[in-house]
Image 1: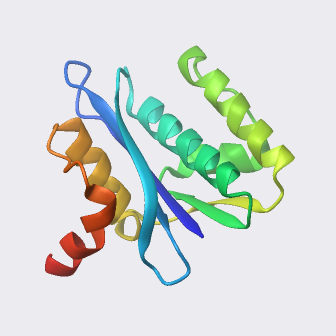
Image 2 (image 1 turned 90 degrees about the vertical axis):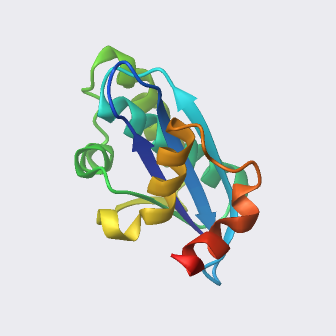
Length: 145
């Protein structure tokens, strides 16, 4: 299972959001989540997205690759560091704990071009135009694009 995560941050005056998209071994969307957030920086949205992706991977309890296009976040997690601003420090600690207690979950940095579904979900949620049944129609939407 692959879980793609992305945060969307436009400005402090607009809502941020995260998008998490789980893809099965056939490449089909099978699960996910999205939520609007109150954030001050883009890294906060990215951190919340990755934490939600790791929690979803933990629920599946099998081998999962959790992917993010946030290089600095993935790099610091790989080092087991939590030297983030106070708003992110607790989330980083939670991510480090999840990875430490679930050796079958791996985090991987991917180029933005490989994270388009999670990016679309996050941006759509931030703009309040994410369809209610997006998990069931996301593959169809991307087939049409």
